[in-house]
Picture 1 (cartoon, rainbow, N blue to C red):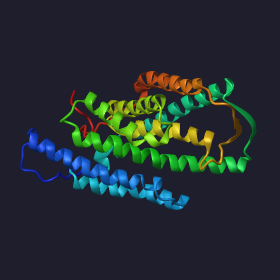
Picture 2 (tube, rainbow, N blue to C red):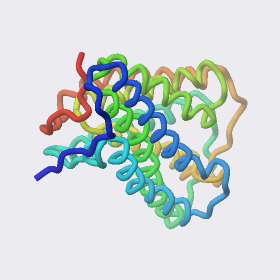
Picture 3 (tube, one colour):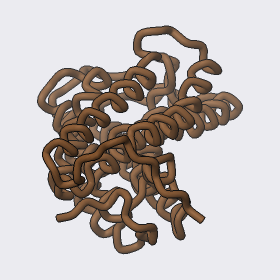
Picture 4 (tube, rainbow, N blue to C red):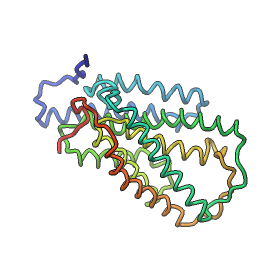
Length: 279
């Protein structure tokens, strides 16, 4: 039996401006706590084991903050294992990994870098294992915070379109330091944020979005590695040209368009739409 989500204390009706203001205050307070926690590695140098422990610790923290602020636990935040959740996760992973592989193949073919060798098999296997684990935690925590938590708090108060817009903007702002501060970088983040939010609206849970996020991040790490150590291929980067970013944007736009075809093969959560906004 699924327990009813806890509610933040309020005596006002759910349609009143007072209730909505309280909901926004709970949202901002909880989001700030979780966001500061997730971004600690940006300000404090942590060894890999501590980094993994910190990200794993996000899930019980998000569960507690969600219940305290009236959003509910991890299930209500989008991590309930509904029928087809694993299918959505795998489909999302394969889909985005394939498009990111296409991007790197195009960049290599067009002369963005020169391949000079391949990592030994043992090192490549370790890198793959690190990428799979670390990028799953990174992707899942981000999706719970930026999409699951915000959708859960504001569903019923904002339309689906408004929530997609809001969470896309939050994604851009929250990831601004990961990309070059350019219009192209902001557009790239916006396309990604839009893909992940649309995946949530379509399926009613986070699993497809996590898969998309995870697959792209794993390919990125296999290409670039961790801490400037390099990826699976030994590469020499050639002179940077404006069209390099254009290739990445073009492939990302193509992935966004193809996402609507992928939706035909995904499974929608049968739970009573804790993340489904009206509209």
